[in-house]
Length: 205
Image (cartoon, rainbow, N blue to C red):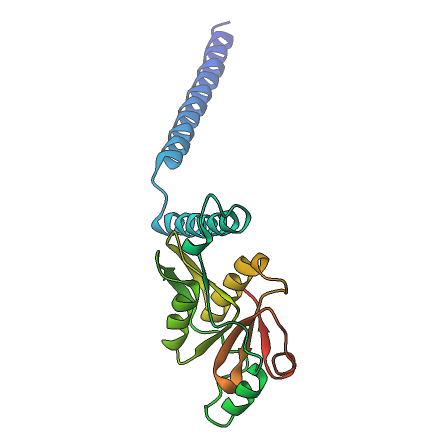
């Protein structure tokens, strides 16, 4: 009889011990989850969110300017420039003998690039291209003022492709970016010429 009582007590003691361990483990797990949720995001995540926010604000301002010019005067956002060059192909052909070509798969360095408020898209991307020994030919009738600073984590050519996609709705043709390796040139245009289609490479973001 005494043995049975002892075994029963031992059994329940073990069960209670296991239950206590489980409760403690659950408490520790809940505490860790709460701390993880409250912990500040890593700098890389903050930066990534900032990039997305800045670029989305640029898209928003661009769409507002294009669809509701009364709310955001076009003159404050859109700048008329020289326009489409009818002699683009011949100029590109002439550059072939004057420049040292880059690799056909050239992209430029992949890194964060800041597009500052008050600058224009053409000016900003041209400066980044020139820093890497390239030129940007902006073969469009308009350029656009940056209203909110944003960043792109991309290559030079990839950044130009994203810009082309962002402003595409403002032009009749599809705005595309090309790499002309033999001319050390990046071309953004809404008109696909023979030279671009045969001698240059379409760039994607």
